[in-house]
Length: 293
Image (cartoon, rainbow, N blue to C red):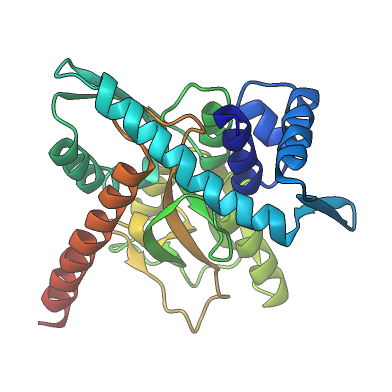
């Protein structure tokens, strides 16, 4: 079976659509369809079936997708072993700026342990922009936020949305409540607005931004409260959950480009993420002990 066709099948499974699979593999949808037709002919089994308006994998398709993941992974691993040299390894990584202090340093430390002579090109931006850059081949890896029920990427940390305020200036009792939120594409934005409306808490949306440092500064100065991931709160004060509407849980994951970087194929990245979770748990445990003491 053609390795590029198997890679396209994996891209469809991981992205959930032929449109994104075509974008990620730099092919047209008609080319993807031709590859899938050839795979079906070679498999002598239907690989897809209709479910509402969507195409999903048949049992045969699921079985082939499982093999395809392993075949593509082994192929990329072999290419890496043959082509990887001691020259400087450039890796392009995207990361939302609210994870630049809580996630990126430890992730980078483990990357450096696994990949000698590593040189990083870092880009900051919200998750939706980083996904677009992955699709365009402008990034090799991206640290993203996903819903807990998604299979996207490899897990780094489970996290929870929280309300935060200034540690030195209390504005929590002001009505209308001054509010600073991430842009509307952020899950916390809609959850915060819906929750406040349902709880009948009067608010004034004073600022929105895709940039974490801007929101952090407003909250730290005591000008507003905000909704963000617990990983991003830094020195801000976490507000009492009983007085504010609940916010959703999220996962922080790392996603690789469809065609992985030669020095960071899927087995390598999986190992890096496993090491990150172990080290991260140890760090979080120490922080909890400090707080309790």
